[in-house]
Amino acid sequence: MKWVFRFTTYCILVLMLIVILLIILPGIRFLFRPGFFTQFPKSSMTDGGIFPSIVGSLLLMALVFIIVIPLGLLGTIFITEFANKNFSIVLQSLAGTMNSIPSVVYGLFGLSFFCVSLGFGTSLISASLTLSTMAIPFFINNAVEFLRAVPRELREGVIALGANRFETTLMVIKSSKNGLLTTLILTLGRAFSETAPILITGAVFYATKLPTRLTDPVMTLPTSIYAIVMNLGEKSQWMAKGMASLMTSIMILIYSIVQILRRHKNG
Amino acid sequence: MRKFLFMSMVIFAVLIYGETLVIKGSNTVYPIAQLWIEQFQKMYPNVTATLEGAGSSTGISALMNGTCDIANSSRFLKAGEIEQMHKNNKYFVPLVIAYDGIAVIVNPTLGIDSISIETLYKIYTGQITEWNQVDPKLPKRPIAAYSRNTASGTFEVWLEKVLKGEKLSPRIQMLESSQAEIESVSKNQYAIAYTGMGYVTNQVKALKVNGIEPTVENVLKGKYPLSRPLFVFFDLSRFNNMWPEDNAIADYIRFILSPEGQKLVEKAGYIPAYGTEK
Image (tube, rainbow over all chains, first blue to last red; front, top):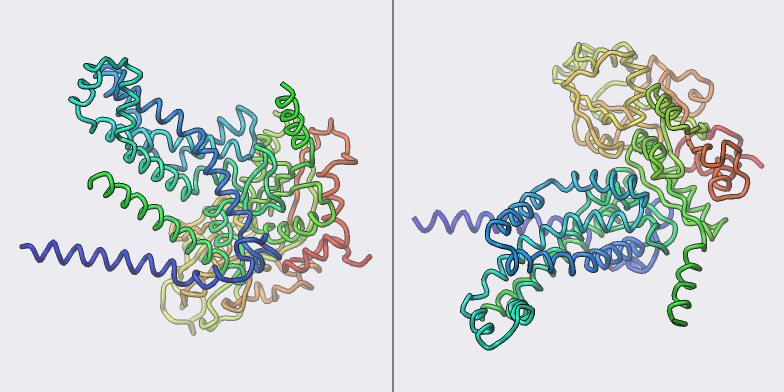
């Protein structure tokens, strides 16, 4: 019976490897073109580099990081430490539901709320707020498990030593540090690779300059791939291939870091 | 306190420095617009121009809700859009910036040279489903017909000029972009699709329509039956319904209608609406 499981696992592994190689290999040689990381795209993206897309993605990640850290962390702590049992179940299922909403719905919400109602327009700030709306439930959903895993005896012991509620919470966070860190990395990884929510709220296919204000639109890696594949001809496709292989490599790196951190925590 | 004042001054300086031009809309106009803003940047270094191309309807609705400054479109405003525009007290100025022929494309290995509007009508309404019904010499194979999705301006023109108000058959496969159409047709021997002339590559073959070849000359003379003007819209109500003189939108429009701008239309593979000579 064992061989059935082994066989299916190997099949899936091989398939995944093939998919990853098919994405990474065709584009990898473009990463070594001179100026690929430092230049603006030129003449309809047939020449030049992907500098603005990288900067845009990083800016977006930085903003998402700033918004998600306080809100996500406070929400998680409230659910595990302060809310009573019934309320925390309600909140957690709410976060779970929000987590399973398709990302394009977040995009439409962001368009009508941040861009039009609040008047931010197509901008960096609308895109990062939309992404954060999506990333916070994702963060809470994963982080709650790590805080819950802190043993009850540890909390009781700290309280017995005379710590107040704030100090107890601090201890709980400290002891699940690795878990929270992996969750944060996963959240940023998800926000990094998401296309649909930013496509209509803040990303543009081509900008002549880097954004200087929060109200400027921005170019990002995933939307640039979409733009090139959808709008431009054969001569520009190399850039999309290069970006796809770069993004896949980054995602592999992120997941490797997460695995290492997890092992660290267990061992 | 002094530090705070200094910081807020820096932020203010950044805020007033330069303008940002947000351009959205047509997939068809996208390649022209990209060349335009690349050149525009060199002429006006203070202005940042950004471009997105998800379809004519997307651009016009973005102009309506104020999330873009300029909308590219491969069709004129629809009646519903004009109504909504009046309701919101807006005034969109249409500028014809280029002409484009819609090329009917097939795989080069399929032995066909010419097709009539009537046959196209029958294919896209689902009355003809196999190639030997088009021409008895062709193989008896099902026609894989592709169309652009409903956000596309090219699709609207196709509805008007080929389908003449009739509904598209559910057999037709809708594709997201012109590039996707070219790829599908170049891979499938029995495919047919339509796309802007600027997108045609040597992977696919553009057919004669009603016996007339899709060339620049035939489009300009009005002979080619599937041709259309391409538009750029901007909102005049932002300037109290006065023609803007000195701002980024005015500079951009002056540039795209100038001989230099029109030369870029030619470079992108479309037909300039105005002279390219100085």
